[in-house]
Length: 244
Image (cartoon, rainbow, N blue to C red; front, top):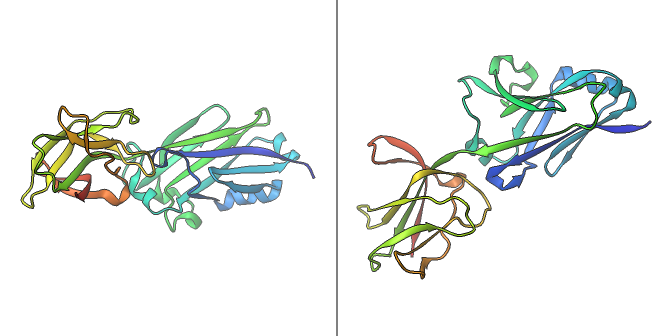
């Protein structure tokens, strides 16, 4: 039998800096039946999965639906999807031309896929006239204010957190002192969480080229916390504590 690639699905996640192979995609029962009938094979890769099928499958128009669950727990808390209604999950409809995100109510998820609840679903549609289908799912991390609580820098008169040249986006950090003696640097802008990226910021004395801390740690899922900021209300931020 001759097999050809029916569709290639790639996942990129900005949190991880690029390709992401940390999702498990499963077809629902209706799609499994189509795949069995048409002789589909599914192969996972380091950045998603691809489907191959017998040549007869390319003469028909049909869709397959897959449900994605992260195999890394931190992706649950850091992945951002815009404007998803309560009791719904993101749902993508993809074909050779585009990928459109919307949402689907949890009660509409096929019963066999409802536990555990997937993070998102994707419907892949192909017609007999389509050539190669390559679908890229681009996922983004949540943004929040970053806070560095640093102990042991009282000898410096004007310490400041500044962006390292390799980091394309800058941020302004306000400075205060807490009751424990930490010098607290809080970003005025929300910054995307990230894992494994080069350090974004350093600590140095104002108007000096000498770094006090050359590379401050980036904030990932482990840094998510709740704090009272200037608004006086609890806010979700990312923070870390550093003793020099």
